[in-house]
Image (tube, rainbow, N blue to C red):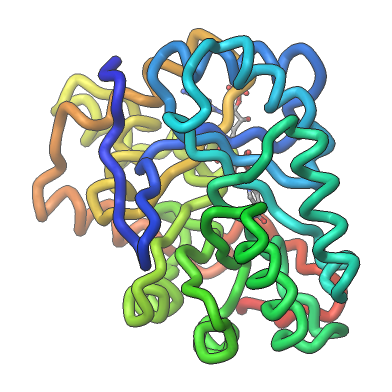
Length: 278
Ligand SMILES: NC(=O)c1ccc[n+]([C@@H]2O[C@H](COP(=O)([O-])OP(=O)(O)OC[C@H]3O[C@@H](n4cnc5c(N)ncnc54)[C@H](OP(=O)(O)O)[C@@H]3O)[C@@H](O)[C@H]2O)c1
């Protein structure tokens, strides 16, 4: 696998198009997967204080031997910590667990209507200006909230991390992100494994000598959407990353885009009181 994956530019940030998701990866498994991914050429790791694995992500990063400044590390603040000064403390605690002096990207994990967004963004900007995060962004923000957040934030927001895969139509929120220069980072890009068996993805993959998973990730990356697939299997890391050596035709892109349907959302959770998507 190539040492450097392509990246997208967004409001001053350069975000590698391929990252490793780490939700549910714990303990030694997590540290080993992070280490191996980095050895194989991944340059972007996604974690969150919620995942209870920041320590292991940091361990894997150091064990990999890859220089700190070559890796893009994202973590996220949980909404119950959005009121300042709790937010600043949460950011510092994440850094201690990761064993890092700064993260590359710090996200608000879910909207929290119980805390005024202006206050939360004020605290997030302060954390950035204090040098604890190179860039800041949002996650699970609807179109209306993207509009509001971009107006309120004194520092540029560089991404909205949202559920994104062929089975879910995210056209509107993606357009809102693009309008404001935010990158779209696709979480659950494999629809938690559903992509593996999809007939259309399998068939298109056969044509390219690729798997359904690779076609699914390529479909997103080809639209400049950042993908962060998770696997706990070292043998899958390399194939999940082999998405930059082929291209889907316009017709194939459209066929995959037509897989979206109502009820395609995988993550139906919303932080208490956060606006529902559908
Ligand atoms: N911001 C948010 O609110 C939010 C929400 C959800 C997720 N995320 C982030 O997004 C990341 C990815 O999403 P996700 O973990 O929900 O789901 P995902 O990446 O769509 O799917 C992960 C599942 O796919 C399987 N898989 C991976 N590669 C495979 C392959 N080549 N062949 C067959 N199966 C494969 C994995 O199983 P194996 O482990 O057995 O390979 C795992 O069960 C998370 O880890 C997290 O970092 C963020």
